[in-house]
Length: 87
Image (tube, rainbow, N blue to C red; front, side, top):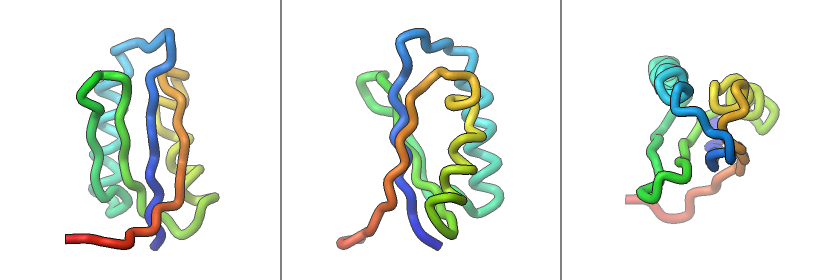
């Protein structure tokens, strides 16, 4: 499985009602073994999460089902992430 870093930046019309559906989406990914970690930015502008997927197409399909995307609440970018140093 490859790792994909998903960066989420809140759109200008961000609606806070998307937060709980997004958290449910992340909990579901975690239960399926497809989420490594997630968190928000301390300045409140968005957050990031790491998805585990077979390839970029699979990662994109996962991310595009995120309520942040489907409700147009955030701009999401996906980057394949190669870890060079870990604890």
